[in-house]
Length: 60
Image 1 (tube, rainbow, N blue to C red):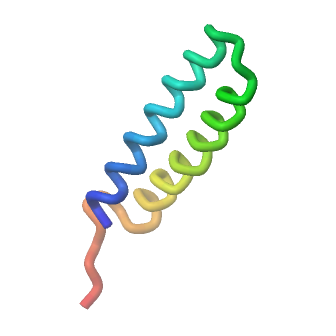
Image 2 (tube, rainbow, N blue to C red):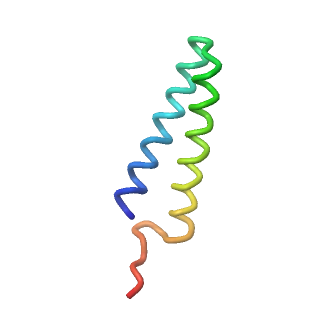
């Protein structure tokens, strides 16, 4: 779960970069999908850190 959270966090960061690039190119479809990806993956990453901690606590 720890590595998956890092990957999702990187996807969220790259989505924010893609959103900025979409604004520069005035590409509406790119902006919509990048914002949706950033919200979903960023929210999942933040929720995982809040509820499981970093590093995650393993339950026996």
